[in-house]
Length: 256
Image (cartoon, rainbow, N blue to C red; front, side, top):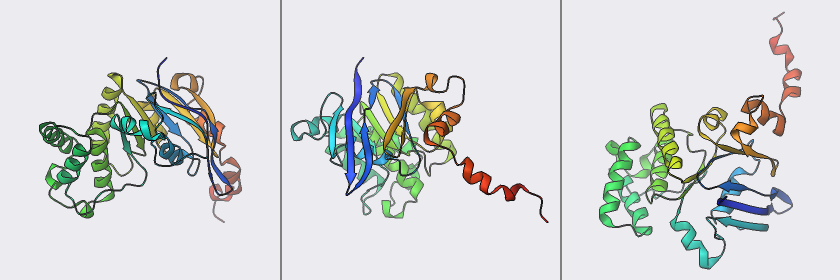
């Protein structure tokens, strides 16, 4: 078994608050891994540590067999990884084509390859009619699609996608889902966070569930939903709001 991602006792504190608590991830190469959890559970913090954007307070990380926090190995990791973070950071005063060209040059891609891939990606994301606009003028959904295009441009071995379908229209969402399934089928790996369990059930082969910073479940999707739905297992692991719903039972009563 070859692992694309492995962590040992990965931990992150913010002052006295433990955002990620000694998690042990194992993500095999060629899998579509869904990382699920409620808001504030530690999903984005984990991705930031895995991609070298945030130093852990403790523990070890291996991405594609290398340590992204080690200065001598970080650049090699970044060459083979694409990232769409939760907080998009695009260059406001560049057009889509200018921004993607910049990304391609950063990855040292040949100019002809950059031009060809940009044409393909702008078409895929339905941004070809908007490519001359500054990204400052883009809606949130358009910025999300541009960030996805930038992550795919170097044709990486591993994609980190933090809520990639948020703000994306239904047609583009379907195209992206089909494209990502094909991407994984060739042996590449996707690490995806999403609040939409339906998307995870349709796409992912493996799932990890994080709650209050702790990894409470990690299994294949088939094993996880055996005998029940993913939603039921998710609520079982993170705790449901049944008590709160009972307290609002008056909403279901007939009006006086």
